[in-house]
Image (cartoon, rainbow, N blue to C red):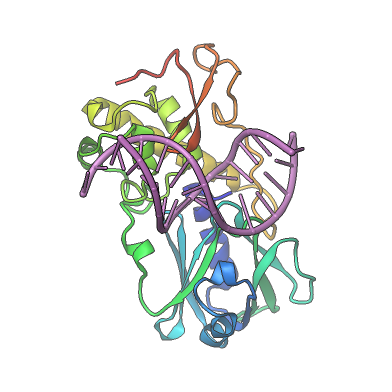
Length: 270
DNA sequence: CTCTATGTTTAATT
DNA sequence: GAATTAAACATAGA
């Protein structure tokens, strides 16, 4: 579920659910999600703290607590949050829970669910390298196409591989990259340093458009549930089908170890 | 049984 | 160094 739009949606809901509330009990027994922290230290660090705010950079979430304590969360491949009554039983693949006493209203319980357990929950006193090393965030910072052109111009990788590097732009994932390159009519195999300024401009605008579009899609649906991604994409997952723009059959290849769908008819190779 | 999967890190190789 | 490739992690679904 998680690329930039999904994580931004998670941030907005977490902020609504948690801001101003006190964590009465933070519990997780999953040493893989908590790695390298111990489960006991997790509760000890968080219990009794009040949530000041929830922020996001790229695919990382940062829950800011009283006393300068920070809780970082990465959703990995299958992570997500849901809100339940504190008495509700554990969800399938529930890996952590945060019981909350809000400033006003009923107690609630925010659950972290993650089938594949690639996600992380990290307690820290200051920003962690995974957070500080991120490139510009397309939503928070915008996309500066001159800067993006400089970044891409220094690399000889296929442009899609360069886009997936979180120091290029934070939050771009496999689906976003595939959809944006299709919109920008650029072949994902194009060498990053072979792109013209106009190509980079189109890629930047396409990324913004796809992010906005997917964010808008997510503004519907059950608020308390784990985010579901039942969403039709233009090309992702559609290899073998005709290109919605030119009708050429869409092709699947592997780039940088990731499945990649594109249209050999209307996406130009640079 | 096989293959694929929205992510990231690490090792091995060129 | 830079780039490439593969594998690893853990689980579910087709």
